[in-house]
Image (tube, rainbow, N blue to C red; front, side):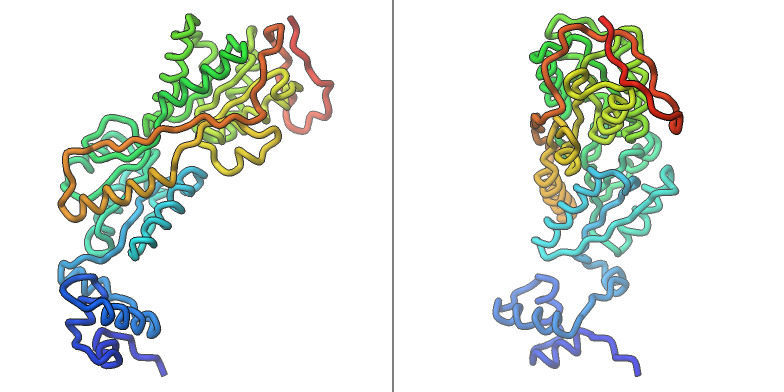
Length: 362
């Protein structure tokens, strides 16, 4: 026989209180003695009580659930943010639901909001690195409790994010202080605006040092490791190759490291490599990756707080919350080689056999 569902009546009978008292104790509403509240919650946990979200939706009450709408679960940074948000939500004794919109990127924001904000959750954190301008505008036109996380393009929606431009400038100045003058930059995709901000910081630091921007040193990428490899190969086999490469995220930096080795060069003796984000793997590659650490825990907790303000209707004029990022020095950067590099042979195709290590020619 199936076990009958645990209801508020079940809990009320075991606790010896009214159903209304149980409802207030579980929802954190109304005047309930702390001892009674603790007793009711303990009994609810013991019986495995699960609130009926459909009933809550019909009543129009709060679900005590925060939602995350995401369209790139393969991103290490996004997974770090989700983990930090989960911790912040648990500390608030709330629940978290994740809506994965991969496979329907363009229409996902509207489909996700339609499903999630109609009773499933009270508000949404939007981690949408590939959202289009059209759908961003549609979100702006809807008066809904949402907060964008780590978004940098112009928007009317509230945003919580980590610093990009100043941190990227610090990376570039670090390489300049090591004597590098030809510094390559691998850009990421343009959707969130973070890559543009990081490129702006790179260019500002070069111009501040009196070094002209060389478009030949800026290579396109898509934030993926493969694109970092291909971009770095193109830079390193150019006529006047860079002695340092700054990738707009760690994944592309890992690809750049692969390219350095595939070209028969040493890191950091021949080429320095820097990333951005400080994902956990950055400390464990060899040599350790110099990168920029975003305060993802602080960003996530602030995003949850901002969303709760929007849910309660207490959100003020503040539309931007920004946390500074910091440069993390490891072993992937060193003084520039005495003689700047010129063209080297491109890496052999996979499976082409072993090659002699190429060296830079002065």
